[in-house]
Image (cartoon, rainbow, N blue to C red; front, side):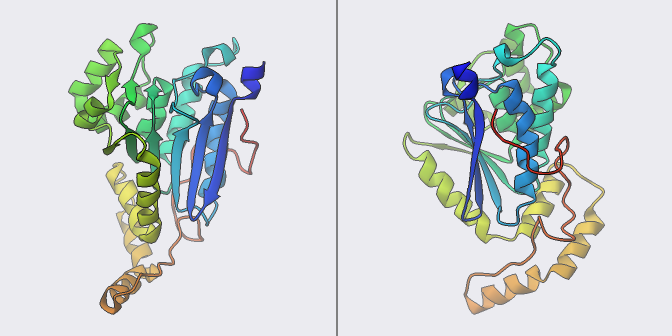
Length: 272
């Protein structure tokens, strides 16, 4: 009971960056059923907050997330469905997302990291996709997302073997964007998110949809760009050698970003 009460998704918002922390230290930040259920609601709340420009997902202490806490699931719950719903909500978050990884990033933890736009890790991290150890069919959507990141050969390697790979291998495979020395992750993530918050949300939102394969919104983003004023501001700032003051917001009226699927309206509790 004490471990269950200690399981939660904690979050802060500061300087345009929302930081969501997977907090379940008694079980290496394994996600309980309540945590899986609460993530889409929390993401919907943060997506609607105009003060949020970037989202960082990380784990409490020395571990990112060791997967799903199977002991928290009741007989009537489908653990795979819970994880997929949370993963899809994270993938659909309309602003840049970054997984900051230390330690184990395994099973459901790898699903969450893969659903982020970017992944930075510290030396010593390890990664694994482990359903073959339990005879579980990995979800089709999760398999395709992993294959889009690392390609079919690495996807098969990870899923066939269920072996853990080190951070250097994950970087080589294309799962990671950056690998940092021990102790350097927080500083690098803070610096990079400052860069992201200074850039055009319009550019980022359109690029995210295009890069994720959406093909029905070209005209929408052309119209958004024409009406936003961000291009004129960016050019003027460049010529005047000053920082641009972009005004288009992914949470503002007319932004047109997709809603987070599976998320309930309102701001429900985030504790697991």
